[in-house]
Length: 355
Image (cartoon, rainbow, N blue to C red; front, side, top):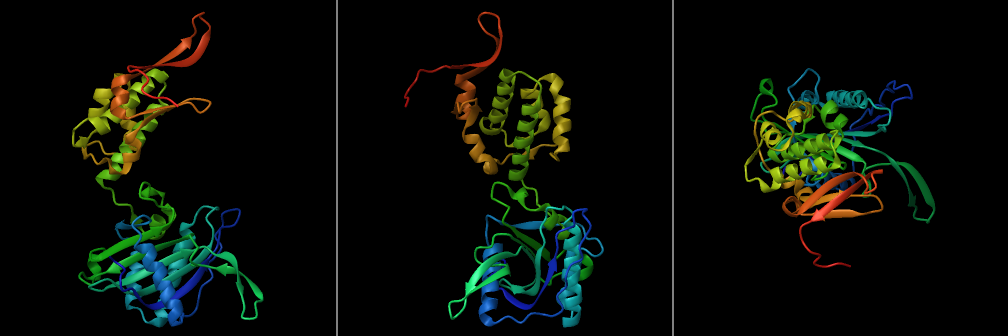
């Protein structure tokens, strides 16, 4: 666990603001001193950070992008060796970078918490940056009066915050960065099935990180991209059902350990679709070479194939049963020759049960 035994030696906050209606930047409001928290407050802060970054479902180790001058990792390296005065000045650069990265008008402002410390065993130096949105709430006094507070952040119920943390093991000199460094982000918008749900502006534009690509993510990208291509293709519903059945068969039934665009298109697509399909998938950043098949991120999708119709009519079946027992046929004229669009479904089995 990266963040066990987290200690924090310096901490400061700044504030970033939502862009104006014309998308002009509102300069951040800088903190001017290192904060001194009570022991109870520091324990609470550490617990929040460790719980978030230790979450397997909403935190992830990131790939660090190639360094550029003034990048977030370079600032982190400077912060670790800065004296207190320089720490305050350098931390302002994170507020500036986040303000610039929040290019969309709908991204809210919030508090930027910058801290340094150490964590893990053996201990590694840590530089953390938190973007936390504020919210309102009440507190009662000892005389049971009520105070309204509108600038609360990082409370137990607060879900609107993101953390980026850089860890340095001290093994490599600065000239070889990012060697010796690791990056971890926490984002509530991320989920185990949707790692790419994390806010791009935060981890990429602001922190200079990228989501590492593994076989499971590439397989998911193949599934989603191919399904999107088939659904957008101008063919009959009957043919579309056949193509989707081919996709499920290729992913679940086919025993090949790899996925490849050319293989799928030659086996399951019409000849006049191949070029458009491969161009479409390459634009989705799916490689043209074979990749290892790992369906762990799409297991839920592969359990059932579903057809949906109006008035909440649905047909679902395991992909292999769908391919073997179900036939879908589009009907464009009725028995009298009048134009209609409906679907004829043939299931080569008798009814086993019904409710």
